[in-house]
Image (cartoon, rainbow, N blue to C red; front, side, top):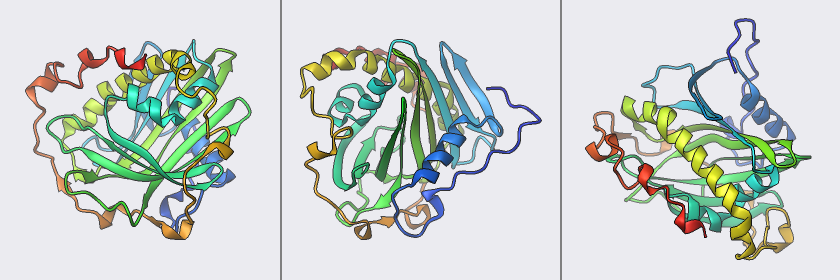
Length: 292
């Protein structure tokens, strides 16, 4: 995905982002997200190894608000399996070692819901959480899942976590054969804080590739796991299976970053154990024994 000087500037996403009212993304939003996932202009390649590539938006590396794009080739994973893994919240609790808590809150439409997710940040930063409106769209053998932050009256920011803002985050899954696919992860998140440069660098050089590889391992193990855990329960494919309460869009409001407390962590140094890779979230924790 080399940047070409002749490449036209891709059209910016037609987000969900600048809207003042909460709306479920429409077909044009999904097309715009797909175009940005596939765009080449304006992205700098920061990592490319073993079928995983990472790009960051061409902005100053110490800028808090940045975009990151990861792409991974999955040679032994069908697109529909990867789509299931990204949807299956019970399975995520098994394979995602960064998750603190995650749950669905309510259903908006047959292909949109609201959910909560909190995660561990690199030590010694404060952990984050987010409330998002998530929507999804199967397109033949390809799939898109994307989200953006909203405010829910029953889930205000917590004192023990920093409420981050997903401006637009999502996945494009493209089938490349009966048992292979390519996944592109695109994220523009405001972590609500002035982050030190080492965090931004570590995210693109280490954390993002590691997360993609862990997702791949989870996908390989998913069919066997799912056979033992409600194999026919897939409400993302069969909305009639959903037991979530319905929620009116009017109950939600857009979560603007400037309405949240800004945390200055720019002077925080990386912990020694994380630097040496021996922390609990380091490579040694990827034994995958919890996936059986």
